[in-house]
Image 1 (cartoon, each protein chain N blue to C red):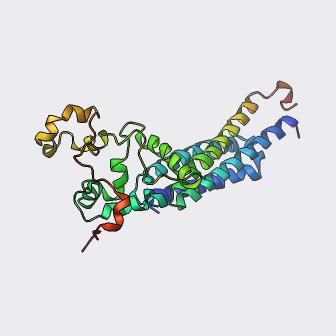
Image 2: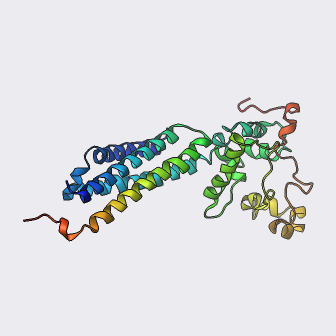
Length: 205
Length: 74
């Protein structure tokens, strides 16, 4: 438990204690002090706990181990350790081109103002597949992989912009008409169906 | 005890119970690191807390709408 989560839990416990008073003796709200306490215990503190809880849950769901804690995502987590630089996610993860503890989120998030929340709500359908129906194998992204996920880092970077192949098709890339990963250029992605035949990298070796 | 006050107290009790339940669910979701914990928080915990707050606000409306006849007699 991190420090901020600890503070949030302490705040929740305080809110529970205060709310319990009104559960046991609601008559104390007859006086002005009771009314103020009721406002704090049944409105202010619960609302703060709600906001803090939502923030913590959204932040936590951006972590790599959160995504790979779902059974269907385990092979995708393993693919980050493939010892082959042609595997795009593995190369990004192992070389820290994306934060290792937020590897999934770095390439699978909608970078708009409501991006993380929108993604998590979309992720709820995955949980439905996991526990109610059956997750597809391999998992496909609805609508395909958007180039913006790559370009929000690579666009403007010297190595990317100076590449003559990239500059020749830049308009098609930015308009998402040509996919970075399925147009024959960077097409080795997670490849979870072939993981039994590849060598894995172990950090620190 | 007047019927009106009983109504307010009942609403406060319901509100407290909902808020406490929601907060307990929130604690459970914080201690459990799993995608289902996110669902638990968003769909159960947050809903209970919001409902609790809503019931509390309704009880405030009850107080504001107290009929003049129910004031303390001298």
